[in-house]
View 1 (tube, each protein chain N blue to C red):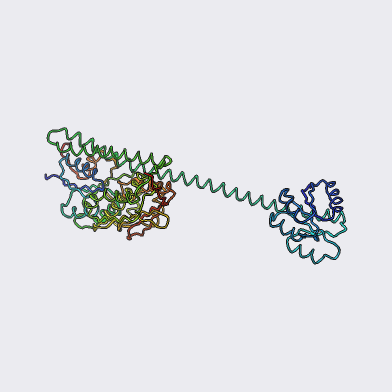
View 2 (spheres, helix red, strand yellow):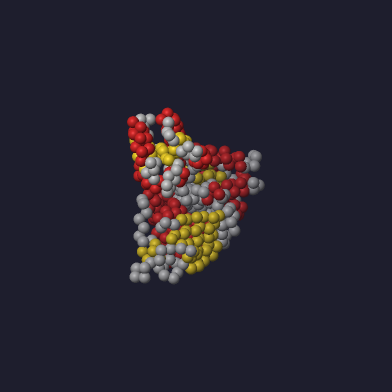
Length: 380
Length: 137
């Protein structure tokens, strides 16, 4: 088999003669007159076999062997040794040389050495090929698995959506019934009830389709310079009346201040609104009533952190593992499971993350962390 | 005959209003509850002739209330109409699960209506379970 061979020897005569006979045998031959040149030619030509004299002025053959093996462990190096260089020859074998031939070079011995070196490198290539095949196989199977998993997630998503839509349909069905009955003079009070049911059902449909839209598209952030405490403050203000109604203590602690940061205020607001709404709903589930939700904003290291903690019934491991990956709701008919998916998307679009820690009976803590990018002083 | 009393238990406020209005339109007296424990309390208080119950409420509310009804000496005989968003096929399955989770000898729910509930279906089931004519028939 034709090989690409680098021949290194400080004696020009040997380079010429040996070079000729190797070329005659069909190999491509590069030559170098010293160790330094050998390293340079090796780097440029990347031969598969290096044939190097062991004793050279300057960089010797052992050093060349070391450099070649360091640059390409798959390259095979055959040492050319003089009479009585046996110790050096053995040393070079220890350092991963493929073989050694002694001067004066016997053509047959050289051919055998070359053939063995070529075989070694072919074997190595084969092993690598197999490994690559194996890797490709694993990659293929992994892709198939992921696709199957996505399909399953789509199925669960559809089931979750169907549930949410059924509940909205119930509201519409109810509105129709009440409005029809309300037309009878004795049932006037049904008109108001039916009317408000119709309005809120339409609101819910609008909300659902908007959330779906947000989820389906790539999130385009609208980054601006804002007070990093603002989304937390606004989310809490928004829910104070609802918290009072539920008898839940809703508290705020702002600590992210000192200068504006760059983030999408609207998206972060929506994200925190979702988290606070969930936290309040969780506390509302407590049969004994009460409960507390605390919202905090802070700068931790180079990050903005928003923490929403509740003292609700908490989540099991099984629930925790699903909340961010599919439409999953623990709220019976009222939840769509979209809130946490969009919250996660918002966090990730900012280059951040969202995490939950919770135990059954131990409340829940959601932490949204995004890089704190300080706004330039003149930014608005 | 006195007006039949129906207790409507659902975590969804609209459905409480709607389902209660359907029963009232047929001459029933109604009361509502938003969760299982509230529902049991109301049931002990009013002694309903029929309970309309959403099983899929947050937590274990619906199921807990169902057990509570079946384990109560007085309320045991009250027919329970499940109003649920699960399909009839899935309901049969969850019924089997329910039976497995209930103590031996506990009766299954007497009726089932899939959400969104149609007024006619609700009243047809109520008629069947109350064993008498409702107002408007």
